[in-house]
Length: 587
Image (cartoon, rainbow, N blue to C red; front, side, top):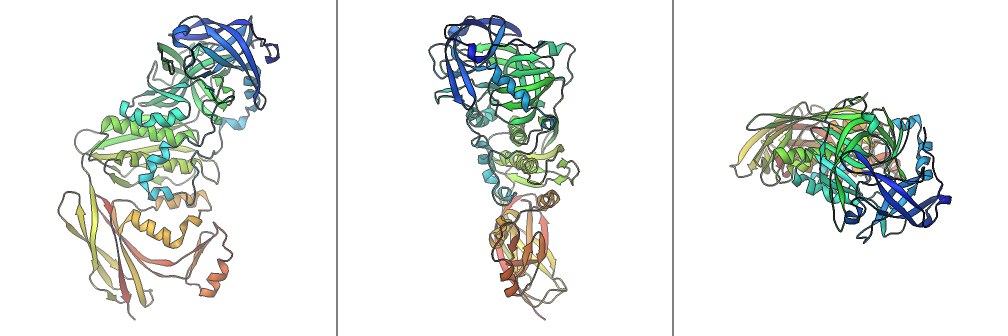
């Protein structure tokens, strides 16, 4: 039966009531509430009740992180949820979100919201969707600033903020948590080492009965060998419908997050911000809305998740297998994947020094109804783990936030080779066996590689000059995949080109060059253009100029060079270095 409510218009200064929350374990306790004022129109159609709290440990702790959503009652009527506070407050004073405004979230729930559509990310992808992958050194900064563009969750005066939400890590090293904490704190989440009372996705009979007003509730984002969960308090329940928190988690709108029970293991008083030590418990439902006045969900629903399986294969020792699932939210999933992988690699590897990681055969991202994405690359150096986790996370971000149509990732399978070495080498020199050739001839391309702390080695690549190539000078580029791709993109202004279909985007991703191969690319000058994904080579200059003027970004791409032939040489190094040669084709 629905709880009787008291409208905001009836709230008066001096009214006294009670609140409900959990201070220890799962037992819901009362605390005292006195209204000290009301604030109208703190935001469009938003009001706030100002209250002073007392009772229990609140005199020592003040308002606790994790109390968000604690219901406030006057008599038998529900007024709202504790949701806001002030930093360094001398008294436990809080802002209460009126329950009428919270219940409006139910009106936003539609069948379509059960599967959220694509959201733009907090870091908009500018230019080519895969451009950032050509600069892996920028990936850590991309995810470190992931939440920076989210609008601030506050709803009133700048000095008042939503009560921070405890964000619990389980299975993640303290060092990895330190790296993730600044970005999460900017999003209003307080990282804490936590635990879980249950690892099973099967709900124990009767567990849903624990979801009552005042009880703790978990919003789990990752489950399995790595677990992430936010903790707040249940405000309202009507049959299978649940409202909690009183303020947004991240204001995601339609979403699909795991609802769990929660228990409080202890309290941490702090002058800056006291919080509850808590644990997420059994799964009981799914949160389907994350809005300005709280989170809303259903008991008994199951969210859609993305399974991730990791097989970490060290050069020495036994393989380690990990399994975890991340929520299928287009905004959150890429960051959660990045954070979880970092946590595992920090636990099993090391945070500093010489290390190399490689995607081995069988590493894939499976997209429903589309070709699998094949992951292949090698990263070495101090930031190798960040590059390896950032690459697969960024690819997931590209897919889930593509501009064509919503997609479902069926699963991510990673087989990572690991060694405590800096497997890096530089292309020092390159030359060809002959620089005057005829069509159909084969030339030998020699490259000298200088490994990190190792002697130089000479490797050869055989390349056949195509029979149909016309006489003239050809450009031969020899080097690592990243540098070669950057050079090509600068020459062809490829930032103006975008795939027209999801299948084209996946094809583009699957044909990205990797770091562990020496590439030899033969090309020649070209007056052609790339028009709506189709190559039109060797156009007369007058026609090419007419077609690209006026330029329409995204439809036309001027081709300065046309590929003639390409060969590769596999190595077990992350390569750097680039050399450019010329070859003259004779009649």
